[in-house]
Length: 480
Image (cartoon, rainbow, N blue to C red; front, side, top):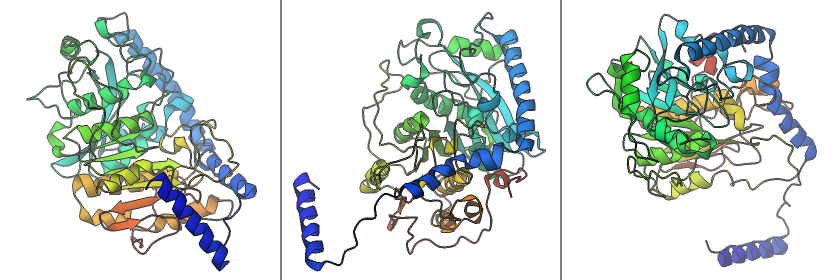
């Protein structure tokens, strides 16, 4: 709609209100309500990791994490041939706030669950650290998911909730640290030593998502070989081969035999969300996308000049994508006015315009850290935001990666409009987890709901009872 038409429509609406005199005025901003909304950002600290039992486990595992990191640097550090160099990363030790949710460190200790560490060489020669998650029980062939971290030192341990719930639901999952994050190398190698430094410039998230997919698809018959560097065109296949020969890097995906390569999804957070929003439309291997704060349209300035990964500045939208966002962003401060209710849904609306299924879910009182479990009060989040994200992430991937049409009912559930656990910790006892400031939406073919908080005819009970991501991952639900 042109600016002229918008202005004309506004004048017409004003005239009608004046003539009829019955339209209710817009509600004024309510500072008291905003204060209650802001208080929700402290729920995770108050009701989850702030508990003494969690803190005791965090202390013990933090010590273990530092010892493990120091041992790696001593045996395979920068003084060794093609050694690892991650000591410049804030979260290399996996201590305290960098530990993520330590409950998922122990997920692989179950008789049925596997969380296998892997290392592989990125295209610029940096060594990337990751884990492959799967269950011993389950189908002979399974869909797969690659999860890309957020930036500003967000290691893969922060995303255990998504990896474990998906693995328990029958997926093979790869989590990995982009260059400059966690225990992946800070610099590149040789001619590419400064390539991707600092990682927040973005290249490691775009290049790395493709590299992680390449590793995910590798097999004993087709070993992983890194692409040539986007910047210099250098091949670092020699480093990968050397480290494989010495038993350090993985030659191929250890769960290759289970992976159904025709059914692959990608998930990303923050800068990782920007990367998967683009790579998911670029890479024909990807069937669907989930973006945590926030879904973007497929555009990029992270080109690949060497030609190892052709990247147009923009791409057509062809694959379904679900976005998540929140009332608050990286810096959590009280609002002083009501925002534009559709301002977080720009990309999702573009998907709908392109005729591709999409949605944008905005968590009431939520922050940028809803999707990265950081056990530190400086990174506030709600109690139930991660549960909501886990529910919809699986339902979206089940529908568009697994091809399970029955998952549509889980997407169109009304459970998050009256969540009992959310109501118990809410200042007003309100169990509706969707923002009242921003409109959450789902557009699935002809079924469109533009206000999930307000509700619509398509939303119905799913009949599945209580939900928590801990129970869905196969762990004890300590928060009942």
